[in-house]
Every structure is written in structure tokens, then in C-alpha cells.
Image (cartoon, rainbow, N blue to C red; front, side, top):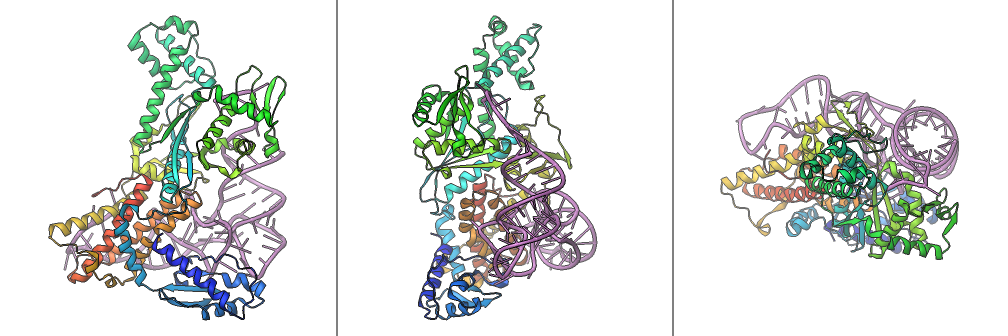
Length: 555
RNA sequence: GUGCCUGUAGCUCAGCUGGACAGAGCAACGGCCUUCUAAGCCGUGGGUCGGGGGUUCGAAUCCUCCCAGGCACGCCA
């Protein structure tokens, strides 16, 4: 448990017993005592609204209740000041000593600083990207990729047992279409006069795959292509494209714990789960097809799982897949989807419930679409013509770090305007560099320290109470707040919070850097500041690691 | 037509499990480099929180209606 958590818990306990002790207070039902960090720093480090909440049942004005609570508080060595404010808030000002301990805590926990126990080891899976292996990853996938990756990292840090998974849709009609598309391009390359069907994949990459086959084997597969035997083309394209996807994700700093092939569900697992649902009378026959009674669980209407021709729908595989997830022991499953799939949410929730699990065991995060801009103007993309900007292109243009930051800095609910020119700029307008620059500056100080042969004393020998200016205290508070930020971010499944916090921490450091020269004459002050700088470096490194962004030593 | 997301400063967005005068970055304007990286810091101006009604001691936040934009509504995946 982090230092700050301990203090919060202690304070909550003290408030609770104060309320219980106060004889004049008649409280029947004591709600949990919430501590919040006031927006305005003149309102203390923490505030509680408990007096206002109790006003009703205690039949007393909030301010009077607050006063009573304060009078009955004991054992508050870590509190410097308490006041009643506004309509009945109680504001607490922590004494500054505890803040210095944070520096010690960071040093001790190092890479583990920020690690919490919110998740209590709960097994949780985050499934993201899961793009069909029928083409390269593009910008839409990229956002989901970073959101999923960072969210998983945050949950891991918050104490969940997290697994990152990619679901490969390698079993549907689209795979045959992929094979056919490549086969036809192959024929065209060999001067056969054939037309590409309307629904075929028409991206340049299809022709490139066909070209590879021509280069390797000439017209060896021409007869098969003509006869519509697509297996070789399909499997060749599939493997190549999947390899490309893996390579792209790898370049983006994303590693999955598991790659799950849809094919492994066909057809045993699908039949199994269909039989189970049938036994539960949740699947019925109509118009020659089998329908899942999703409307019974809040969906608009029932959905086909086995088509008239006997083949399973995408949903059928998804039912089997999610059954499998829970069977593997995941208590909670998070799916990160593009917003264009939101129509699918209700039926998947229904699936989970039908299988006998809590609806909450499936959480779906929808990431809104990305608009790529260049100098403020939209980059044209036409999916139809296969003309889209790939993940690879973007990384190549702006770099991994900037791309990751931009994709994760906004709430997933918010449309994202991604300006390529801005992401590339090495200037004040670019938040990525701002954060990395803080780290580089720290490294620069440390380099100076080394050059001058200054020894960094062990913590016991250092008087941290030398740190007294506003900039120093503020920086200390940001550092102390980090574990709480992780917990909040994990709880609300909101990765963008950590991107913002990184910026805020960097800002606190830059202010400190400008106001407090580190290598000063006063040796004690210098050493205390050096310790603060080291602690800041540690937290920045942890944060950047979490975001999957590098921490350069110089810029 | 139905459902989901969005509408907050000139621009891009936080805040939205209700709290104390609404925040950040950029843009605009004005300052700061003889010492650790000015990719930085300090300051100023700027908002009927899309609109109406309601709940509450208290609403950007909850409910409701309306307006605007995006997306989705297949025996496709």
C-alpha cells in the first residue's frame, strides 16, 4: 500500500471514529467517508463532504456537524491544519513531513513504485486490435492498439493479473475472399484477362502478394487459380499478412500474451456451446436457421448463429470464444473495439449472460474514430479503394513515441484529431517532447553531477526538509500522487488519464527546474534537491514505461 | 425511424460514479538565457459548459425534451 493510501485510510478511520464518538451526533447509517482532493489548493490537501451528507439524518446544519467532527478527532500527527469551509466541507492540510517520506518510498520501490493492490490478483483479459488478417493495420487499429496496451499496463500495475490477447478472425468468408483476390491479381500478372469482383480486396498489398508468388513459383498455381482452388493463395496471404501485423505491432511496442485463432473454435467448440444453449432453450429454429434468443437479455432482436446453409455466423464463433475466455479462468474480460462495432455490444452482453456469467464480466471499450490531419487538413482515405494510411506509415512518419502518445492522450469516447505535422514537430506544441524533455534534463543534471565528482549520499544522511519552496513541494505532491492516479485510472478504465498525468508531472518538474537550481553552493540543499530529482526521474521512467514511450537521456 | 458517442475559451481537449470562484495545451499579447538542455519558465486577456425544463442545500456533471455532428442498425466479418 502506498504511503498516501495509508494516510488516507488512516484519516478516514479517524473521521469515522470521531463521528461515532461525538455524542451530540445522531447517525443511524454512516455512509463511506469520501476524501477528495479539492481543485483549489487553498482548500487543503484533502476535503470531505461527510458533514453535508449527514445533515439530513442528524438534523443539524452541516457546519455544526463539521465542527463536532473536528472536535472529536484524535491522533492526527500527520495533519497540520483542519478547517470547516464553505457550506460544510472539512479541509485537511497534511503536515509536510510525510511528503518527504515519499522520496524514500520511491527510492525503495523503484520500478515498482505505483504498484497497487486494487486488482487483488484478479485474472483479467484485455482483448484488442483483433483486426482481420486480410490487410495491413491502419490508423483505426492503431488507436485501439495503444488504448488496449496502455490500459492493460495500467491494470497490471494496479494489481490485476492481466493477459493481452489478439483474436485472429481466420475462419470466415473474408478469408476466402482474400484468397480469391490474390488469385485474381496473380492471374492478371500472368496476363490472364480476368476481372476483380466488386467485393474483392483491392489494396496495393494484394497485388504485391500475388507478385511474390509469381516471383517464387512463376505460373505454378495458375491452373488452381483458374479453377477457383484458392487454398494456396488464401493460406499464403494469411501467413504473410499475419506476419506483417505482428511485425507492425512489435514496432509499435505491443506484445500480446496470446494470439487466439478463430479456427480452433471450428467446429467442435462452436457445436458444443450451441448444444449447451439449445439445452437451455436459448437457441431455436426458424426459417431454416438457428437463432440465439438474445432479445431475452436486452438485445433488440434475436440473432442467427447457424445460417440456413449450415455454416456458423461470426456471432457463433464469438459465443464459443467468450465461453472459452471464461473457461480459461478470466473473471473479467475487456474488449477494445472500434466505435463502428457498437451495434454488437448488446448481443455480446446477452451472450455472456446467456452463458451464465455476470453482464459486468464483459466490458467493452469503444474507441471513436481517428481523423488524420496534415497541417489542419484531413488526409483523404477511402476504404473502398483500399486507400488508407497504415499504422506503419504513421510510425514511420512521426515515430513510435509521438504516435503512441497521440493515440492515448484523449478519452476513447472522444473523436481524435491526429495532426501528423504537429506530432512531428520538435517544439513546444508537442506534448510528447515536453514530457521526454523533463527526463532528458534530469539526465543532464546527473551527468553534471558525475563530471564534478559529487557523491550522492544515502538517504539517511540527507535532510529532505531543506525542500521548502512551492515548486519543490508541488513536485513532491505530484510524485506522491502517482499511485493514486494509477488506481483511479485503472478503476475507471481510462488510460488517457495517465497520459495527462505524465504531462502534469513534467510540468511540475519544469517549473522546479526553472525556479530551483540544483547544483547550488549549499551542499545540504543541493543533496536534498538531487534526491528529489532522482525520485522524479524514477516516476517519469515508470510512467513512460507504462505508456510505452521511451525515456531519452538527451534530446 | 431506433440505438450508441460527441457538443466546455479562437483551435484541440480535460473535468461528467454532483460539491466550494469552470481547467490544460496551442494560438494572441508582455516578460525571463554570465551557472544543471529556452524542445523550458513567469505573467495577461479570453467561456450564457449546444438550448429549454426538472431533481438537489449545491448541476458542466443526474433526469427529461429539443437542436447539431459522427457512427451503427445483415442468415457480412
